[in-house]
Length: 92
Image (tube, rainbow, N blue to C red; front, top):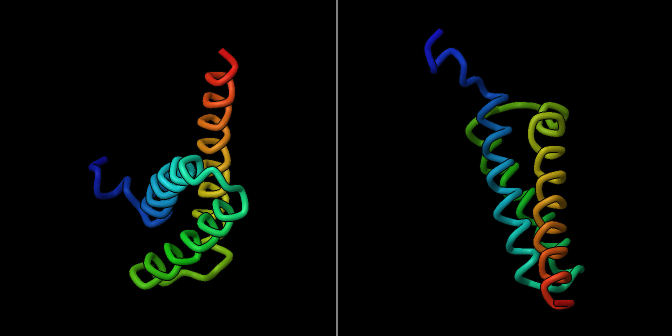
């Protein structure tokens, strides 16, 4: 099996939303304001949906399963890891 057969639209969307989720999670940590971080995450998620949907014409249910869930979980995970690391570094 060659690489071109392995990389399908589902994998591309998952990788794209994973990278975006990690970047926005770190940016949310740098902002240090929960409300603004939440707004940033939602705006970036909607913006990336429109950008990626212009390249891959899929229905919203497909994007929910292949992109948004991955994005939200990674965003929360990265944000909470950096937040926790910062919290414990201030205690020391």
